[in-house]
Length: 297
Image 1: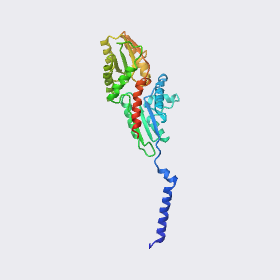
Image 2 (image 1 turned 120 degrees about the horizontal axis):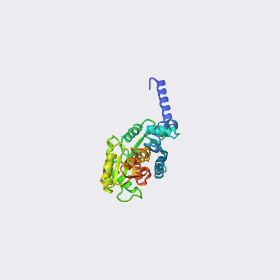
Image 3 (image 1 turned 180 degrees about the vertical axis):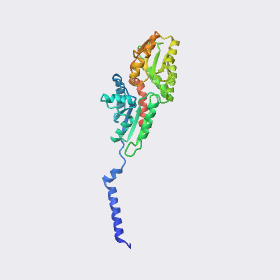
Image 4 (image 1 turned 45 degrees about the vertical axis):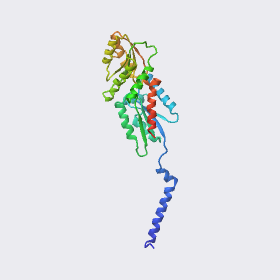
């Protein structure tokens, strides 16, 4: 028999209360794991050019058609673009703001799909942000990131084939087509020469040039001189035909690609359509999104 009956009864009462609380719905629900809620976050560099925005809208429509039961949100990696859009009254969250908002909405699993062209600085920043949000208390359980357009060697070959399928119908045999990419000091700039290799395997008159990387416009001109070109098609190698496409590629300024070609007696035929507008190219991004969704489970 216990020498302290009062203490024993008090201890039993405490344990009984704890058992009752643990079994009650309110107490149990507070610590129970949340039901899975999956979402998609599409992340683009962004554009402030109103005429270029339908390319991203069309990409969003494709994603919703492919995954009608999964909510879709947007984010933009370019700070300058976000500021311009917000000044126009357009919601333009950063990836961090969008992921925080999705956590607040109750999402537990998010597939983040990059709409960048290469895995450069913007993409790697996105990776770091996504990883930082995974596994936070009361936050997102899992976050996976889909590769950009050219994420692997196989992607480079697939993109080359998709670009060939998207060439202008009015282009005549032998007329060069130059795809203008952004370019970057990041090591991922090597993706552009890699794409050039696969394009040349399909058509020797398809060229890649970049605004800020390699191959440069001078490299492109050397190839055009060899071909003695007199008419050249210019196409953006970017998701949207934004500022670079409309000014650096097709603008009236003396240093635009169109103007520089004209100085050499070459007629330029700019095509102001971003790669996100072509079904064959968009299909590659959609495959990457499928992979990102599969990795959530």
